[in-house]
Amino acid sequence: MFRKRFVITSGDARVGKSTASRLLLELYLKNKLNVRVFYHGHRNKLSMYQTQRFEINHLGFSRGDSDRLLLDLEMFPKIEVILTDMPGQNLREFKFFDKDVSLIENLNCLGYRVTFLHPISYRKDCVEDYLQDLYQHFGSQVDYVVIKNHYFGKQFRYYEGSEFQADIKKLNGLELVLGGLHNDFYQLLEDTSLPYTQLIETNSPLNTIQRSIVFNWMENFHNSIVSNEIASNYLGLSMNCAELASVGANKQSPSNLDVTEDVESEKW
Image (cartoon, rainbow, N blue to C red; front, side, top):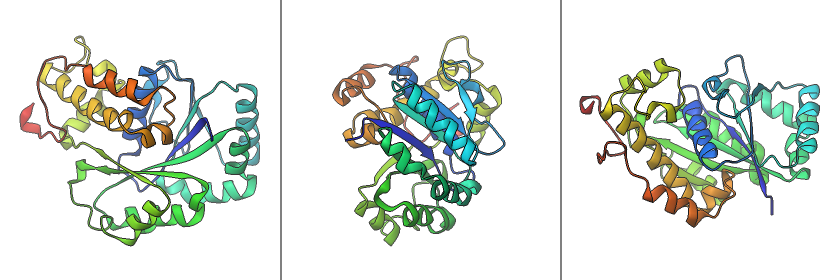
């Protein structure tokens, strides 16, 4: 059984890939995992975590990039999780990259199992152009976590009950839910350019209710992972799942407000 994880965010543009990556980084920080972080493309959307004990580097698609990555992982065997934030337009290039350098096979040899973290919205492209392309190419070589992003609503008619959902289940894929925040609230978080944990501190630029909304939003997502043994495995959490779930359940919101996972703007 693989003891390490190489987690890659994938999917259509603007479906929440970088948001999911940031939430995962917060969870890895909380549990003090030994993590390396990379990004593909031209923009580092995780740059606010550069100061949070993470070294965040660009990962290209050349044979030289592959050699440096694999050598690095071989030299530092205590790395538990690799997280790579990949823009949707890079999937085609990544598939050629994997075929050219046998990336997944080489990662397996170093003890890493690959997980694709794939947020979806209500759009057809999310499943027909991206998710299907992903699992038809990689099949059972990797694991899949589909995130239903409730920012786009709670109806995923192109996914739920479809052949795509059935195919993911056949591959032992997992589904998680990311609670929705109002568009203005997301923009507020983006404008601060701060890690999410800094936004719930008393000296953050957010007010008390806003901090509580962020706290509960993070905790709901984190608890959905740590309370699920398969999710914890797929996403690289090495601690005992029951212990992680207990830690999450015992935490209290900074303002003691009970905020639901889907929050509308008028509540703040």
